Length: 163
Image (tube, rainbow, N blue to C red; front, side, top):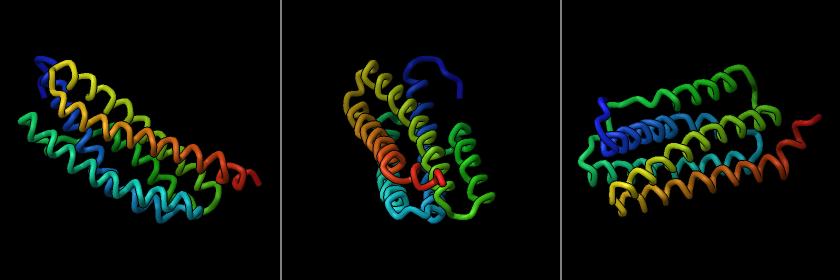
């Protein structure tokens, strides 16, 4: 996609985020299934449902902006998911795999936080306040997911994997 102005950059970011979220909808069930810690598994299953809502929001944002959100592949997310899937192929469910899954999931969250943060800023600059609020809602959810993963890691999973 040729970028001529900030509107084009926002449209590109929304397409990239849409692709990223769609890829996560496919990857999260595999990651959740591999988690041996029940709280981690439930957190991933919960985030899968939230991610499905985020996909729908991005479709609405695309309509509002007059941007077709499909037809683009987020290569960054593809790489992050490939790394996580490699962990799943090489390891049986265990406390150590749980730690690695949290790390992989937090990489995903941080990637999304950066992308949504940029998209919110672009939307605000362009005067798309409704779009900015919608994207901010998702940004807040991604931050909450990251905090929950940190809490799971620090309160139980990291210690269990020390042995």
